[in-house]
Length: 262
View 1 (tube, helix red, strand yellow):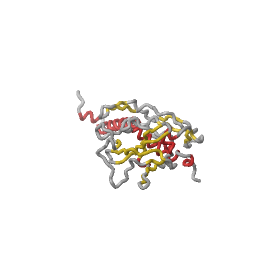
View 2 (spheres, one colour; view 1 turned 180 degrees about the horizontal axis):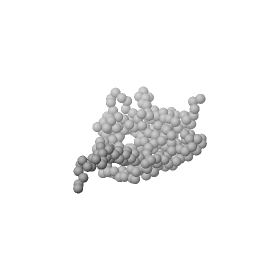
View 3 (cartoon, one colour; view 1 turned 60 degrees about the vertical axis):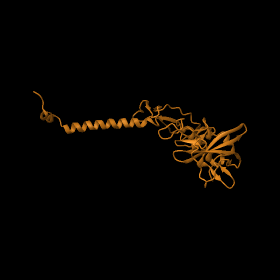
View 4 (spheres, one colour; view 1 turned 30 degrees about the horizontal axis):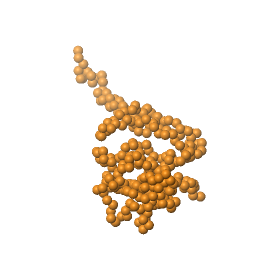
């Protein structure tokens, strides 16, 4: 004798069975999303009560590495291996949340205000193409500066200590946003000439004096500023490192900048 629909409904409540199945599916979905959420930024490196470093993985455990295929044929694997260099700083005091005291040159080591993210060492590209997005105007020759604005090319570059460090040779433009991003400076150093790019928003142009002012760093810092591996394009990693170097100079360029006002 077969069990019909009526007999099944007498022994099981189909509405409750459906609800339980939905709950199980929803719980599995939450677990899956929590694990996938840990593909970036985990395991966490946190402080313990003594100012040391501990690894925090949390629950659930981060997922195993997975490789994704990008539109341009490249692949990316996440979670990425932990290739961060050792932190060149120690806690100033032995309690949790203590400020970090640099152990070397903080602008070179990427500590505090000069910290930067280890982004891909590849240039930002235009939408769905392999064309670099940020390039000097000698490459983007279809772009030009407005005639009503001062042209910094050819102007001398002056550091925060009033010393002339070099000459502005070109400006770098973001072709997607139609904005200026960097000034290219040819710097005179004791070992010869070197080319440095300075973030545009950390400079001011004095058209009357014909000079570009960089108030975040001193003249000596241009000799050790990060440079580009390709003179006609800038990678994501180089962008972050250069911006952090010159931006961190507002705090680290001279000892008095990091001291209390009173």
